[in-house]
Image (cartoon, rainbow, N blue to C red; front, side, top):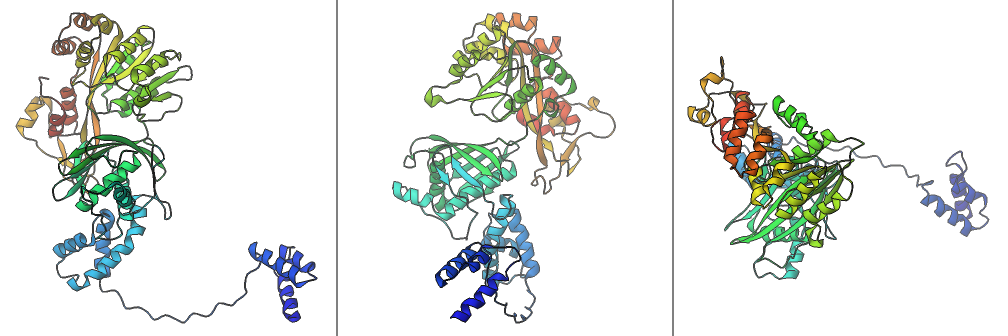
Length: 565
């Protein structure tokens, strides 16, 4: 025993040249107990480790080459492009494109390899994060969602009947397969740049569709038996009533994917075959555009710049939901911001977070509405005010009173064109003389899909399409200026990639003010603005975009009403 202790002491002394915890223990170890205590301390501090020599490894036999290596590589490419596909779907595609290459008896081999790829490939390609960095999901309150990865197997699914009680729904919503499916839905949507997610139940299937560039496209079709559990999972995240399946519900979820903070507005309504869910994605990390990036033509841009530099008045952006109104208003706020300007906004929701601007989130459940918030904003000594939307008579009157007291007010309305903003305010009950004295301009806008630059090629559209948007052979000379995308991988075979704006700017001059007081129709105001101001309509702006090869006549006709140019 004594020989063993002395040998151990000598080993500790030779660990390093500098004094260590182990050497201190050796110098003062008159007893075995004190020595072992020092030895344990040195072990915990990492200063001593066993000095076992590694055993020599026997040379491994070289494995035989995999006869299906090339086929497996091809299937892996398909899986990386569409990671939600099951092994059955990939095998059927392989048998269709390369029949007989992968024997039917080797299907299990393909399934095993596919399952081994899932966790590695999903982290890298779906979530865009390094290994070990998984996305985090959480609700606006206490609800939490563990990070997960897409499908662990082809048969994973949870069957839910209408008679399932609350406890069973909560248990099923926490199952690994359901958590991973919800995470995959969000991550895929963010990667594809989708603005909306649709989860639609039908009699025999469930469809998941994304709205990308303003158009819905089918993405995946999970098993119908998972539908109720997926919806229950979303209800838990959005702090909704998980047991209520007869009434519509709304909620919000916060997502963090690859370091990007994203808000999701959830709307659930009951249908015949189950609850239908639509989620609006608001990426707060998206870089805001400047006025030059909006796509306005030079003359329209110069007039709009002069308009937003006015000291007071109301400027309205009009158009349907998803037409880019908030993006245009934020570009205007960035243009006029300065250290000497106090800018306050009230929105529902806050879509962009901007430094140097005070932003207020509407909360109707506690009484913070547009009208109440606007009253408080006026007492905050603002120079510029932005109201997310004018929805009622009360908000419209307060905004107009703010403009009359020397503030520049930006807001949005849902109208078909710029002159329609005048008649909409009158329909809300605002007095004509207040509208005429406060409104200084309105801009209507639409978004059309841009021809994919990677696969665009010249083509000749049919005569009816050109005639519908007012294009004649006299509008161009030489080669045809029209272009169309033939479809490629970068545009998902659609021929379009990204969007471009169409704008219609109305300046409220003395003539328009007089027509407003006389309660003239929006059509008369538009005709007058075209004749006096040279106002370019939405369809006229679309015509120029088609002639420039940016979009196609079909796209302009899809978003603009037919009218005389």
